[in-house]
Image (cartoon, rainbow, N blue to C red; front, side, top):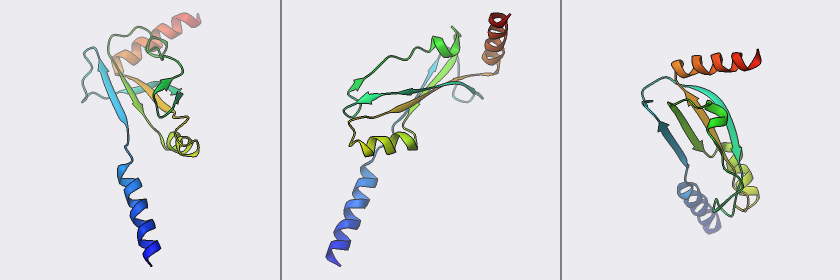
Length: 116
């Protein structure tokens, strides 16, 4: 019985001490209350618990020089699984890029012009 209580206590401590990292950055005049649409996703590789990053992500690739956009970086469920399996030697994150309706129209127009 004592072993079960110790195991349950350790399990609860691990769950409660786990942080759910999420960061949202609003660039330009975009406000948190505005409706936004995801226009791109990037999976980022970090090592040794996030201390060393493998590459820099450029927003320009996803939002095409728009002035107003949102960048959200977080650990997805799959990121947590990979981090746990590797004992945080490999610590991935996911970054998503969002624009408002006006920005989405501009992006579509620019991308259609590139296709012509």
